[in-house]
Image 1 (spheres, chains in turn green, cyan):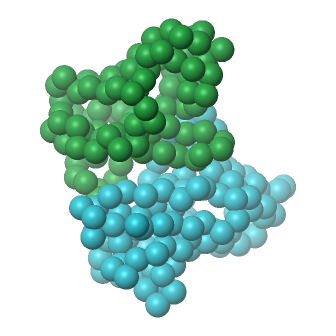
Image 2 (cartoon, rainbow over the protein chains, first blue to last red):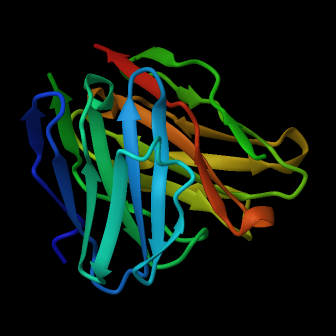
Length: 114
Length: 114
């Protein structure tokens, strides 16, 4: 298996623009997680899905952020409009189960909002 | 709520010396416990995990951790540090009381001095 795939690996955009981050989880994994990592706040869980359904989005910082999982093979995280404080590395992870199993992380998307 | 404390955001050891990274959790019910490693510009990968059974858990790259219920700890050790061990290490817990909600610690950056 190719592992969790994220695209793009790097994104540079200007404030106010829409940003879309993409994730392909490992086949057969029922759970998908979106995390954000910054120096100041560390690793934060934004949202997670189970069988394509959003279960907990309490970590989504504000309405500018949205995430969807239209099918078992794809999820996206959108930021509209983007702000400089959104600059971070965004990770997608997937797992077979909720708590006892390993979460497999993608390589991350480094977002810079100017 | 569950919390994970990693003592020491930065740890430096000499090559060949013992590595000890500390992790404590707060829960009256022992959670599932994990250690992840993050190399520069990469996603997190699992080093080892404890769910049930033997309290001394061996992981990849010579690392091991011991679950100590009385101390609510899950410290990570390696007898002899290699230069390639330089990375960020995250302790994580899965709280059985809250549907296995996953919590990451703030991370410990390990530097290995030649």
